Image: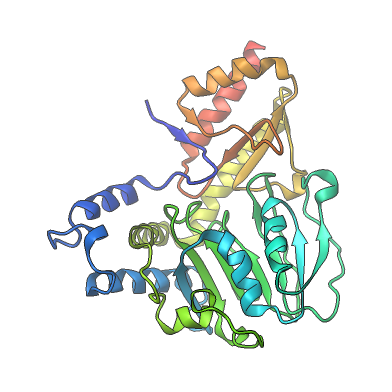
Amino acid sequence: MKKHNFSAGPCVLPQEVMQKASEAVLDFNGLGLSLIEISHRSKDFVAVMERARSLALQLLGLEGKGYQALFLQGGASTEFLMVAYNLMENKSGYINTGTWSDKAIKEAKLFGEVVEVASSKDKNFNYIPKGYHIPEGLDYLHMTSNNTIFGTQVMEFPQVDIPLICDMSSDIFSRQLDFSQFDLIYAGAQKNMGPAGTTLVVVKEDILGKVSRKIPSMLDYKVHIGKDSMFNTPSVFAVYVSMLTLEWLQELGGIAGIEEINDKKAQLLYSEVELNPLFTGFAQKEDRSHMNATFNLTDESLKDTFDAMWKEAGINGINGHRSVGGYRASMYNALSLESVGALVDVMSELERKA
């Protein structure tokens, strides 16, 4: 039976990527050696790193615009502190839209004053704040573009004259944006790009080197740029799979191509949530994420029946986070429209049975 993987992360990857990656683990580039046992300084892997970095900039439309792409380690959780370490001199601003914003704020407070410019905590983060005032004197403004736990997504970003930083871990490469409005973007690979183990950082070079503090080498973006993202041994396998996934995305027509597919997936699922009286959406309609759809049953007595039905249909990973309850269907780039259709069929069948 085909499995429909709605896991929030690590998540589904394209089958052709998985096939190529598995072959490389056994024999990479016909070397008679595995990808994971060759030197990261070898010309074969250096070519992988260069290709992955170049593709990231190409797909985001940032090539030749003063940006550098890095594949680092430590996940977005390490970026929470690296951003502040590298960019915060006195005071920074954060838009708090959920758990990951909360964590980023906690780390930034170690380096200076943090202004919580806006928050949706008052309604358990089921919406994106709007119409807020950005105070003067901030070193940067930090946002989280998509919220995996609560199922909300920023649709419009503010125009600011300070560096705009964005955690795009769960919607990177999923929709068209003017990425040049951001001065630094970071994203864990394990949602839309590859396996856990590497984190993409895209940074505009001219915002670096302006803080007075000394930065440890491993946490200094300038050091990683100077070493072509190879200051220390990179996560070889994760970078390689990310490269393959970016190539797959490029062949689909880039971000424009995948956005069209993602819109269809989101429309199909949210239409069912709206039309089926047994379900209700968690996030406010105008802020609903196209990556993570959160919804609940209107009659909890049907939970055991529904759970048995979706499991029997080969559906995996739709249990909601404990902060929200209910269900969460993560529809990352590699999830097929067919898989969303399978979930919608089960939801419709529950209505017929109820």
